[in-house]
Length: 419
Image (cartoon, rainbow, N blue to C red):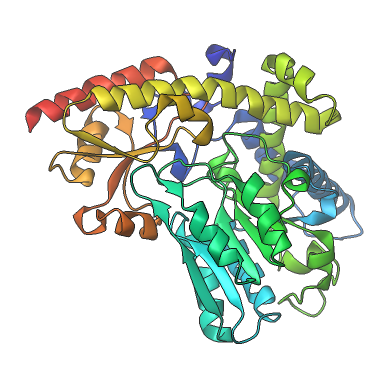
């Protein structure tokens, strides 16, 4: 199991007395990430492809970050990794390129369980190109995707399926191992939003078979940088909106302008932290994964797998606390026997309390949570809570302790007794 004393020492922000349960919107940053960013700015701060030392050193760091991110996703090569501002910006960028391949009447599948960053870009190009959007709903009672609707939508032979790996509102993990092969059989490109999944479980884009997958490093202990995987043949063939002197080869053709070099160095530092975690605490996971992965990829996968195992305890404890709190309504999966189908992101409402008021009361106790819709507008609308202020969202990650969740439970119970 994870040694929280060692792990929490890797996160400078955790020296404060605050309890960070706002992680689905952005985790605290690892020390190795901060060190990489500082070292970059002090020692190798230069622009791309210069003839001088710091530029060569800068390019080497960026190349290493591409390689490490490829191992994190298990991409076939670093050329399949595109860095950008964040998941939203990267998706808007790629959607604009894919739009050139779409024609009037082509179909796009979207789900009501997704973050709007995996909805609005596709709605925009559907309107522009005259495409038909087929929506896949989720079951309000447990927050799981309606797979029967997905199957019927796939029978209409869509050109694109945009689907989340895990819901940033309800924590549901979508069964992509079922959805992706069916989508590919239907002839669709598959675009996966893995922002909420990446901090909690290992990713293997080759095994998954998707065409694109994207997440943001600030959701997995790094800086504000987006990381996109794209299948090389698609990246190579797609038209890129770029300036003329820029590279015509992937990934450079999509990495427009001067990138956030220090941020990308920080991504490398974050992946070094996850690699360390796998080496320190993922020995059992390494043994199970060694037949498929090796080197840095093995340690990264083992680190995230160790996180996944520990976070199952956090999810169980959090759900038990919420179920025992009078007046609480939990949205999404609540069955403790189905923890493998969710990440530890949980949304709830308390009686007639406005979610913002609950967040404010928790803040007074030094406990940070989110309220509202978290850009999962379709989710809160479908659940009928958008006009009521949405929901309160609690999202522990592997540096959180059971004691912190118990403190959250005590404060929430005190709030519940006030009403």
